[in-house]
Length: 258
Image 1 (cartoon, rainbow, N blue to C red):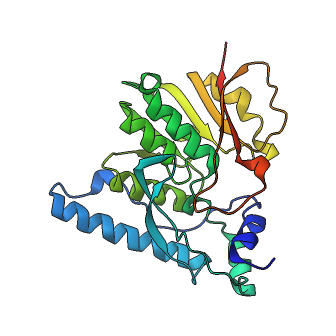
Image 2 (image 1 turned 45 degrees about the vertical axis):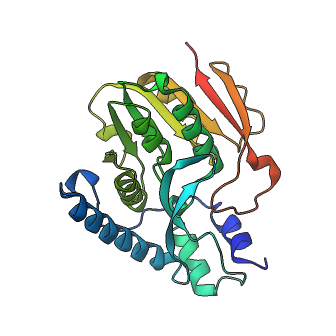
Image 3 (image 1 turned 90 degrees about the horizontal axis):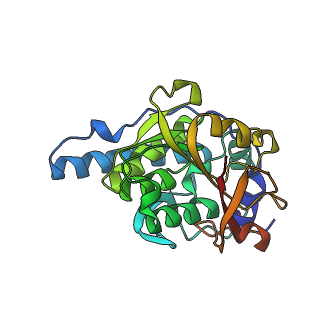
């Protein structure tokens, strides 16, 4: 492995672990525009300090998403160092992989789909399962959802969701697991959650929690679940671009059917 990007591809293939981070909720931001900007900047820096626990040689930057240029996220710097990770950083990445500092290809495609089809979310209560950076939930809010609940086991991901929601002028409700969701859900959205085969059971369990389920995935080669139908296929790359194998750039969006 010669570059940081190549090493990140390998080490982010490990299962996520729980890291420690202060919970940040955009609903706590001050009302005035000036104070909100200051608070968002402070939260951004705090989130960057969480990144430095894993990748001290990298930084966060606000980046427009290629497929959804109206959406900006706090993501890993686009110009990655062209040197290998030091051994200590490799150990940190293994211990606490920062999935949330990337906008994965499936998230981009599902976010674009919702923005292009606002009728799927307008006025609805939506659950963003495995929210990561929060890009899909943010797109749902921008497309007219009444409420979006972002669910992720990693507190750092929930902090990223809060910061990114504030950047885009929307609010997300953050919870750490499905058991904490109390309100009825109209739609569940999930992107790039099937990379771990242990998560395949969610294909059956998620439809028990909501009338509709939309899933975007590029990791399962033969997705042939009988209760999901293909809506669209699109080529996309993770951002920042990790130059993954082309097969992981082919994203498919599926809808659960009863």
